[in-house]
Length: 160
Image 1 (cartoon, one colour):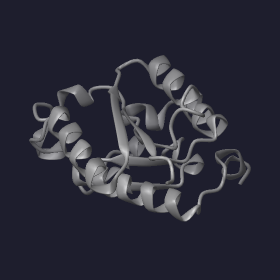
Image 2 (cartoon, rainbow, N blue to C red):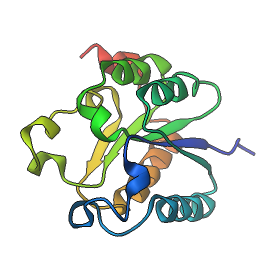
Image 3 (cartoon, rainbow, N blue to C red):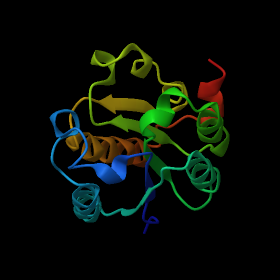
């Protein structure tokens, strides 16, 4: 029997405020509800999921950097760090753990500074604009790619 896939879901700054902060943009679901839904989906898919959130860039960098050998994939909503953190981009590229970037809002339709992701180029893909349902989409896509063996190394993607 194949080993159970272990996935890490990382949420960046201010996502602990989901449900209260700008519900017209981010909706009314709380981070706790998002995590409960992901746990339920993980059980359906036969995978394990661990969710973490931090407002501190270094925590996210540390978690990504230590994921190799412990997790098979990462779902990452780096929030504002998506647009500012070279350190997080380098961590994703260097860790070699397949990562899917997710955003609740359609960042391409928002302020100009939100339209550029520093991390997207070193991720398998990006899901954006589908509200909190995007987390489930990201988890499903990541599991499908991992099970198909259709992932290239992050370092290979970083050289493009």
